Length: 234
Image (tube, helix red, strand yellow):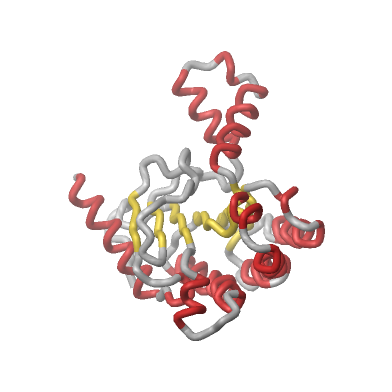
């Protein structure tokens, strides 16, 4: 397990793009890709536990984009909605550590799914760690909403640096918005619109593992990569 020897040896805030559920299912011989989506949703709890044991207090996870809701086949999206209503809230509730935040347009979700997520947000409000799930997420809409909220709160009279800070504070999520490390699984070499404002200065680690096969050792490899890059910049 990676432990911090200096304050900057571990990221304070880890982002995750959990990709590869469908390919993992096909590689395992499953014709129904929903098997991969369920395995991926259940694996979220493992990942959160690994972060907690390493003392990482802030995490942001890309679950479902607005584009995927609009473009994927109806049956597949309906299954994802069921997982978001049942498995995902349970993975968060099973820990006593993570406080849930949601970033995205919950109006794209069925009422029952939206209600289940909102209930998990309310039930975890006193917990110390902060987990933001991107659900129905659109990066441009996220930034536009932050700008509008900052200006409505009086940010229009601020200088550029202060306005930038006000926009950051207005974005959804926990108290620490800036993401230090983004991990993308499945080997894909793209960021896919993952919180561009918050991850401006983030290190990016691409793992070849499909998300359901991502291990604790793979996380430690990503954390060691992060620490090595920080050392080189000193």
